[in-house]
Amino acid sequence: MAQRERGHPELVHGSTLRLSIGDIRVALMAGDPGLKPAVQGAARRFVVPGGEPDATVRAAWGDLHEPAEGVPIFDSGALWKLYRRDGNYIFCFSSPSCGPLPYKKARFNADFTSGEISLHRAYFDRSRPAYPLEYPLDELWMVHLLAQGRGVEVHACGVQDTEGLGQLFLGQSRAGKTTMARLMEKAGGIRILSDDRIILRHLDGKIWIYGTPWHGEGTLSTAARAPLKRVFLLGRGRKNEVIPLGQPAAVARLMACSFVPFYSSAGLDFTLAFFQQMARDIPCNELRFVPDGRVVEFLQRLAC
Image 1: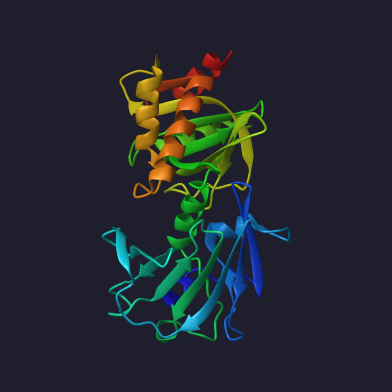
Image 2 (image 1 turned 180 degrees about the vertical axis):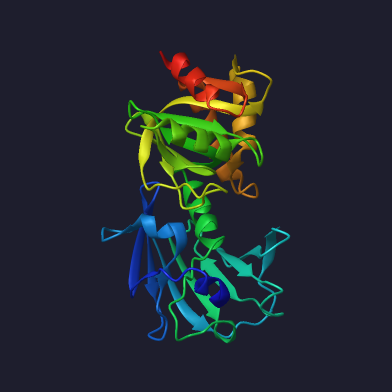
């Protein structure tokens, strides 16, 4: 929305913008000569110069109203609702700070590879560049693209260690993901991919972890990837210790930390199968830790 754009003066803009997130390329195109698409915030790190996109969305100004959108699928209880009509999916975004009408609608085809975004012109300063994919739409689009058999997004801190390998620290809010990221960052020689959201993909016989633009309180986010070596489910403790998890327990906890469209049976089936294979191939443990630098030393000794 226009008010939030003013809080992010550094924009990347052009008639067509391409982003690569999790090695999935998406294109944001102007469908209206009066609209200047832009990318803002951490998403600027994921802008790429070219390449054939895996999915495309066109954005234009519109005059939005509140008609029935079709069959209700999901209500976030906050900014957005999801409907299905004529085989398409429609996200409707509203905010009390704007007014009674939606400030944005986004329509996608069944596999989310093509879409259209309408921005309610009355709520925006049309002389300024606009970010039609402003959060949470960018993440919602990616979650649904991943659920088509491409991968999974999880609530996690992900790091690339000094050997170039990936370590994943999963947990819900306040589990210690940002704390772990900051402790790892201080240790040196470790790249933080994200302190809150990580994409997982199975490619070339390996599971890869990717940084995303959707960081946590630490604002740590990197457009990079690493092959996954170890998985830790975070828990606070009085000492640093690792407790191995059996496959059923690991899968259940991985599912609880995933971003998956739970109204999609195909998406659920794919995600469950993905985590079952991941729990077979990668050691999954619960990490109970004390939030200070000793946990980094503990993990380094564990890797030896």
